[in-house]
Image (cartoon, rainbow, N blue to C red):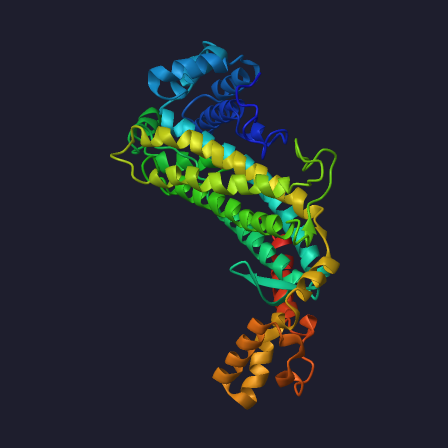
Length: 440
């Protein structure tokens, strides 16, 4: 059995998303990189074309021993050296001398990491778009559904549930744009970022040209220069993943709060066995929000390691580069699991307008005391109006206060939603633009 089956990570367990960043996925990506390097060199006439295809054939037909690679990685502090040995054998004697020609371990591993990230980000963005579409539906359907706005945990003024959903939507759209803006460049620099080995084999100055052809073969961005110790791609990737889980974490904490027994304004989508307690049969726990929140708390901690990769000594770093690998995998699979969970949560979130109305009535006229204060200030003055309303609130007599009888009826929460509907409309317009724009 896989030693990391997801027992301790239910946010991604059972989704299949972990396969995108598994050891097998990294192995396949490293092999893809070796093939791309050979084909790029063949395209530029550096190695024979049939040698490149023999290498590709060796990748297709070869049996690569992951366990052996992992064990042998201890000898070089990375798995590439052992992989090149296995690939050389798989490619056969005619192509053996052309395998990994001019390459260095970091070129292969960094490029493979970018490939793995690209494949994972595609899944993440797909689920974020599903989430955003569901949130847009909620915002549109409830743009005028009144509920209590809460500040510092207390009833404040009325808002619409549509406005709350629009807030979640705005964050989801921000995440989509950040994920889409991540630049994933190929890595090619040789031993110390000069491309000297590649040019020496080529017999001419073609390093930048090789970088471009190599990147095109992989479907990655063309780097301006090698980035062995200029770790912007890694730091940016970590930041985007951290933001994404944080954005979904906002959704999670709100759903947890609104689904409390004493609030009951939303309920997570029902499914057989979901939300059950081992001891308390009456409970329906908000487990999807809980899973989201668990990812939102873990990814920033892992992304911190990725940010620290910027502090890289010399032309190749010892230890700092190696420290990136596991945190990058964690960030990718936790974010992928969170995005999938968010799509499930928002796709079936149950909204309870009647309960929202009941909760509004808990504060009576107090929920519109801001509006009353503005109305009274025109006759009593700002300070006196505020003092009067504070006293009436303390005495619990706000609903039938003599001092307020001459005012028009200003107590309907649905009539004090401000620009909620207009703000929802603005976010929906942005959603229309973002969700219908991809890769442009």
